[in-house]
Length: 187
Image 1 (cartoon, rainbow, N blue to C red):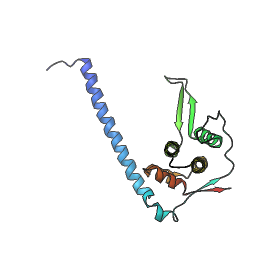
Image 2: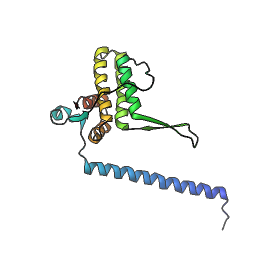
Image 3: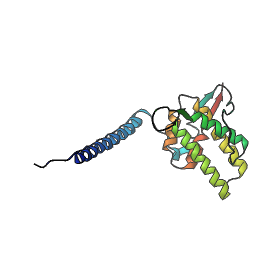
């Protein structure tokens, strides 16, 4: 029997560990899909025309949006949108300083499906304006509503259905339609 050197042992252990991790993540993904199919009926945005009157997402707001805490960076749609954009980033991206380890700061995304949808729509409107497929006033109006919805949703704990619908949406038009199905109830 041949002697296995320490480097070869380390390689074998790493390969075995990578297989275990790969299959355990695949199993978690499968389990998550099965759980969502059993518990929550997912909204299909492709049938929005027939469900628009039925399905509405209602979020209650108990105050105003406030003003941004940090510096407001310019936005291509103007100052009002820039302030709302800054508020959304402050609400959804939480940064903390880390004193241990390699990094100096750690950022955590709160409700990532909503933040990713808002980022996608920011890019969508920027491209639509450059292609001249939408007027600047209409883009401001639509994106302002989307940012207002994102700010209101951040404070609500029962946004799981809306987040699942956003995660399910593939096209940006479907995401815009979902945001227009939101009702913001002032309290």
